[in-house]
Amino acid sequence: MPAFKSIDELLRVLYRERQLLGEVFQKRKSMSFRFDYAMELVDYKEQRIQLLIDEGVLRESGNFIELEDIYLRFFEDVLQVNEEINVSAISDYITSLNENIDYYLKESNERRKGEYLRAVQRVLKTIALSTVRNVIDLKRNVENTYKNEPNYLIKKQKLQNLDAKRNAIAQLIKECEDTISNRQPTFFRVAMDVSMRTTVIDVQYQLNESYHNLIEIDRQIINYLGQIEYQNRLIKKLRQLKYLRDQVTIEEYTNVRERAAAVNPVWMEPRPAYPLKLSISELQNSDDCLEIIHKVISAFKLGGKKRRQEAGPIASDFLESEKQVIEVVDQNAVFNAFVPQSTDLYHFVFAYHYNKEMTREDKLVLFCQIASQYASQLRFTPGSGTDGNITFPIIYAL
Image (tube, rainbow, N blue to C red; front, side):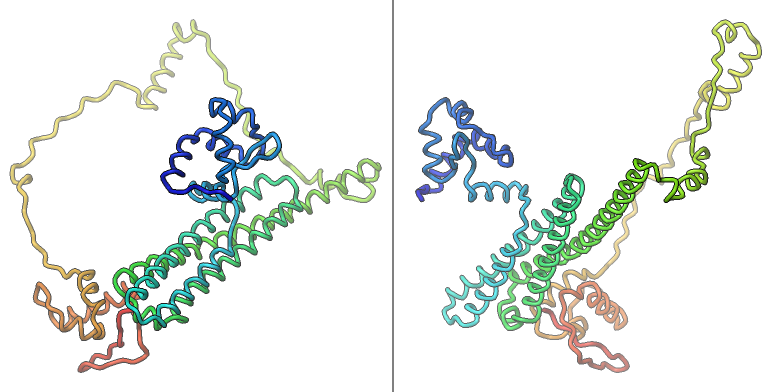
């Protein structure tokens, strides 16, 4: 199929026909964009439309035109309006991730190893982005299906299919996390520079957020399926009652009269109010009405505004600023200094040069704070060490 020869040519044609492509994209679901209307948008220059057809941007179908699938998916992905949940793409990315990691470990040339390393980072970011978008599309499709699908059987089947895709995405998230943590420990230990560490941390955070969103979507699907089952049972019961009523046997086979007599909905009705509006002449001439008006004004505090008392002058010493310097230890700076080191966290904290005097108890507190706040970025070994009367765990950076 013919294609554009350069990006400049592609962008130039897309920009020139932006109005036509925008209109076709908006009507992508209705399949009702006629060729005659497209001619109006290009000043009746048929060769411009023919160029888009020849280059694979548009497709002609009888008297209608539509976007080719490749450009349709591109626009939907960029604008994040895609309704299709592509689980297989994430699986392919995980396969590509493992392949590039194997290539990196087997490659001896440093330049090609760097290319494989960048490919791994690219695939990791793509996996995180695709997972997040699939989760967003899944949540939107679940809500649209429940609210807009009129057929109960189709609605139930669609929700069950979406639940299967949710489960598939959750399994792929676990597989990706297992690849990072367990399956490829050699690669992530050897190639874990600052850039790779940042990428891994970001990907793990996005995957964790996506997994928690999937749990919420699972709860929502279960709730929707339960409501559908309840509505189906209710409709079946109503149809059965209607059939008995049409056959004039509803009182014979049901206790509808007793159930209706037991219902007392009067207490749910609002309390009736019967306001009595007084005449203007009565309000103007009656002393009793004037007294009532004064009472109402007093009750709503609508009388004359009280004069506010002015505050006294501000004391001069109140505006004087006092500076207080508190020396603290930057835990983030200490942790960043610890990451590239090969020693364990306990010995590093006690050997680190601080900008203030630190006692043994202060260093021990700092060790506990770093171990708890940065636990996801640390590797806790099963071993332990002793320092006097202190027994501490052996902790290294990932």
